Image (cartoon, rainbow, N blue to C red; front, side, top):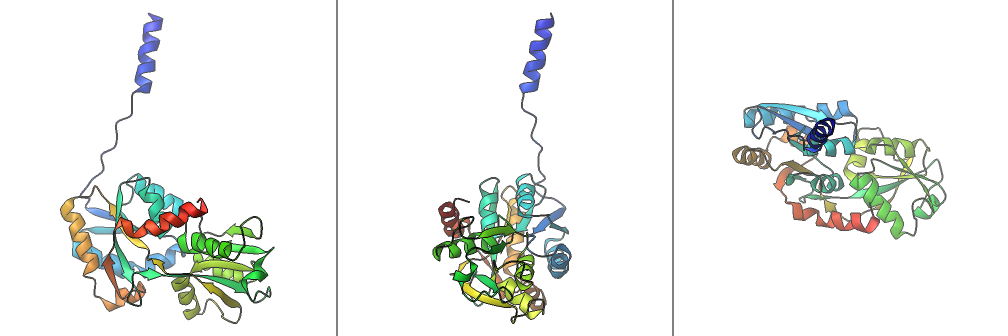
Length: 279
């Protein structure tokens, strides 16, 4: 009898737990913002866009800023957010683990692409990429495209390998990278060119203290992606709201000329670079 009872318990333990059904037409949409800047700054920047989406979709919109890229990937994987603004690399990583789809990206200078920059510290005497050798290089998040993957590949193309020719340091956000280089805490750093330009325009980065060493080739812009299992009509309403955004104030806050349609295949180039760097 004891044997039978133990066997039944063993079978029950092995039974899979029932999956939690996700609401495919939620009354409140949770919209995640890529944590590449200070959370308070991001929430303020996207408040007008939140209000716009709420009006267009006739439902509440909750903005979410996760602690880092990895937690954002996990949040979309477990259905804790419904759509989000991803970096190209973090989107590719999230896509490989969850049922999501890219649907929109911003247009800047007439194109849905952007560049990364390598910057050097004037205080540390960095005038060219060769001066980085033996020093410290600041990156953003491990899952960042323009603040890790692209600048790492740029350095590799110049013959500098992480760990062998320089010491990599991950600071979490693009603005933290710029500050570290400006203060001389790192010889160099990599970050998004649009964010670097914005930091200069806001007076947070002094071009007398920071030198642009190199600029990358263009890469596909940060994608907006949503849960693929959302209600079909809701998905179309979301796309329409994004594609028809014309409010110049909101677009200016987003540093965009408009939003355009993108698809998953647009990010194959990111997958190829990720594989090449073994990330």
